Amino acid sequence: MLFPYFIWAQTDDWRTMMSDRTQNFYDIQRAYNQEMGNRPYEKGLGMKQYKRWEYYWESRVDEQGNFPRPGDVLGEMIAYYQRHNNQKSYLSGSGNWSILGPVPVPNNGTGQLNGNGRLN
Image (tube, rainbow, N blue to C red; front, top):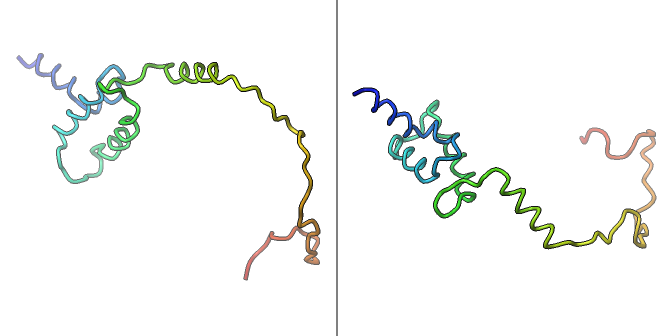
């Protein structure tokens, strides 16, 4: 009877679930809250790492809590660039630029650039 319990205990461990992208985000949250609940912060339990992970992923999962598949973001970027095929009209050196100033640099008498040194 210990063997099935051991398998169940491993699958509900939020620490191992966090690294498995096939898991559901809301199931991981539920497992964390069941174990930690409203427990005050204690060093060494992984609470801070979990909260960072949770904050990162909560805006990136879909409505059902599924993580994005690898390559989804790249696919969206490629589709965006195909829809917005803007030709780059600006090239380096193009345009009519002129210096407005200030042009003369004050002489500090040391031969070094101004602004490099201590402020007293």
